[in-house]
Length: 607
Image (tube, rainbow, N blue to C red; front, side, top):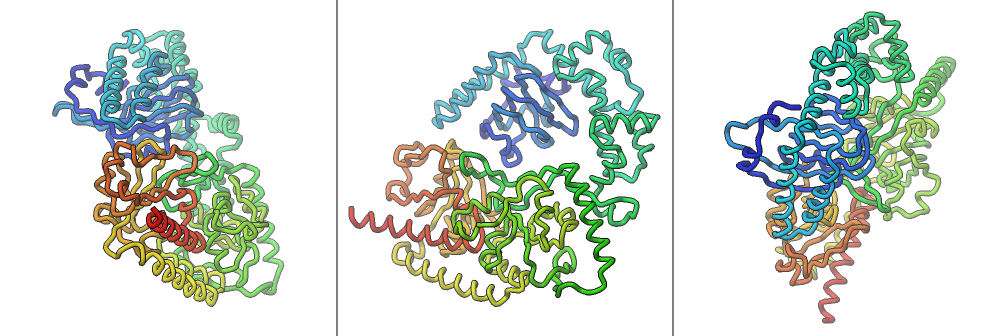
């Protein structure tokens, strides 16, 4: 139990200023929303969380956190049913530090009703419902501070035990020494700890030691003997047996497998390693989009398998041996001067793998052998062009199995790992399609095609602009926004992502507030629905996921009084179609928008 919240009283909360910023069932929104307090409620699911690098394990059905969100890290998402209440809370001058965790393992069942009421009222989007939301949250806070004193004592005891183990794991600890430090009997402490966390005392101690051992193995130059001593084991052989039992690898194998590549390359004693997690690079936005009913997050995980790492090492070794036995150059090569140095590869690579630059390759008549599933769902790319392109999937051995002779990626973190499979070029994404297509022309030895594409692109841009010039006056302003969940979360776009085909492509003008709040580096801003009136221009383009509720703008409270609604100048688009930013997609998006404007203008004429 933390010291600060333990000393807070209901009177402190009564005098506090509490503002609810957002309520969401999506844990991925945590890094986006700025606030100083989160009420996190997990109704079902288990997992591991880190607060200030302290792991908190839970296996109960209900689990609550109240804390400053800055250092919260989800290492395993709850399997289902969670709710996040983002708040700004300010107390009087005597309480100025951020709130520390207040955790209720297996919280009372009747809190579920309060949580349901909070969520229901928030989704109604009325002034009265917002007031009720705050009332229900106040009732939840009251419940926390009036919980049975015995229950609070048990929560406090578990929290103190967790804290003690995490600070003293490297010492000679046992169930008896831990219980003695807590001033309780072994049986009582073990029972309470097991009930609250789902772990026995020694199980949790071992879990903590192994976790710290992993970090020391890959982040330091310490030997296995030194690591063993630093986590509390004098006998390194015993440590090795324990480590292998819980990870499937010896400490030496783990070190070679996960050690940063820069250290591997500089040390002949270390073997090459595979990837732990392969996160896809920038997918144009910090938000989550939906396709076919599921969220498409900004980053995808490519889970490593031990088998893949050994296959990778074997393949590399075989390649090295083959190269040593070959004295003649098998094929003409070229060199690309990248930000990672000079990359040498076949002049005309036949087997290219890319994570999300599929549209750029196809625009230059180059078909890769593998790409991401999301890119292969791009509706602007004809199905015939997607044939025979394999989905890379969620495992790095798939990339290896495709035997690429060139990999093109936007994932900076995984560049070193991919470069172990084949020559790899990292391209940093930027909102300048003509510039990028020129760069791809150089990489793919298709500069003439890149120049032709640029000419064709400019012609299509001019044609589209001429068509809408008869409809949209030069002084008119446009606002592009995304209704992420249909429940009040609004993303306003500047000249990037979904806004790119509107502002750079069609050359339309931003609303003043959009221009003021967005930049080239951060071309979006998130707002609450109540602030829409500050950002709307003469026309509004609304991106909406196909499976979110359709908004009736003529009756919606925050919309119905706006001139843009009264003038019938709100245009809805499919946010998944406009999620892609590549040469093929942007041309298709500009054409779709042009058709929307023309169709609306014709409808107005006939009425």
